[in-house]
Length: 262
Image (cartoon, rainbow, N blue to C red; front, side, top):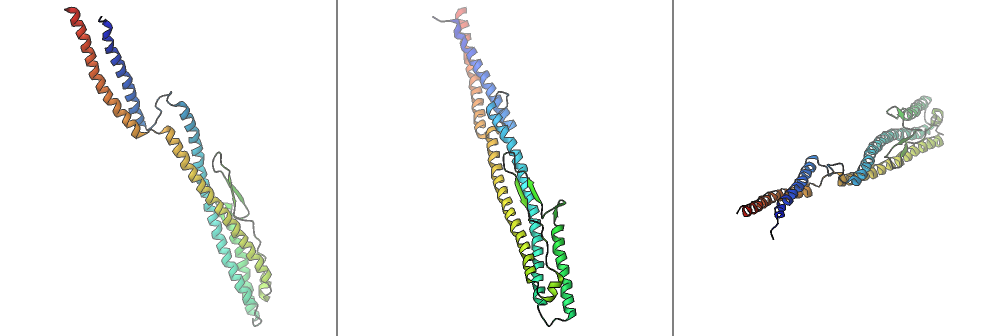
């Protein structure tokens, strides 16, 4: 028995076309926006996780900037230490020069005068070493490295007191004082160098973490262009096929009408 409901094929095809049209529209929106989620109900859990990671990523990016700034400050501190080391070398030369009994009074005065200026310059170099107006030596600086990361604390070293005196240089008995001054400069170098290495390591870890977070966020938010393009092409083919099937379903209905009329 032939039922008039045979014409229901028309409506089923039309419904399939409408559903496919929605999928094609969603694919086009994703490809045009570059986002996976184009409707409020799309992958809401993934979106929530992704935005949490996005916030973490933002804080890590600032952490990278902070660690980079710490490196710049420590590089300036090391430059100052290098200058002080060169001045200590000159003090050693003056010490040797002053340990000569053939030195005249004028010779000794000249040696003492130069030594005094070097000692003053060592102290001036250290106290004058600043970054953005903040003393580099004797100051502990902390910079944030991200919401869930341990802050980076760096210092270029303690404040040094130059103990060498012009009088001891003059008579050539200042070896111990020069040794102390050199030891202080060396300690500054060791401390600043160790902190520089810590900052380099922290920066490397933060850069790696930033890359990982960026990939994670992209996997949850960014559209898969290759996959979505395939889905769009599939939808467009189905749309063409649906149109053809709709015509056939319509023809089926026309045949039923002709049967009734006959």
